[in-house]
Image (cartoon, rainbow, N blue to C red; front, side, top):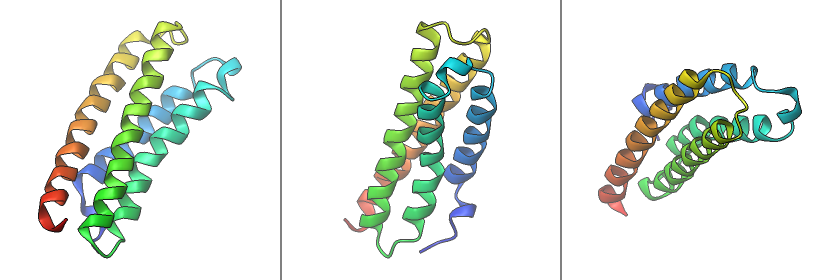
Length: 121
């Protein structure tokens, strides 16, 4: 068990979550129960799974939660791609920025998961 708030991937995930939430407020109201809801659930799942995993008793369990977090990052990236392809946002630069940050976060989470996997699984 460790203090998840000290983990760089957690800090980065929280910042990413805040940015996606802010962005999602500018999406059309018609998507409130569609992509807005979906992207918010997915993005909040990233830091929540990191924090929950940090509270487990083994690296094996922690690894499992980190893989959930990784999947959630990919889900956010898929939502952003849909937003772009459906022209739901006029802020193309912001979508691209969120995509870049999501890819970077995905790499960080994946690398962290590999380190956990080699520790004692």
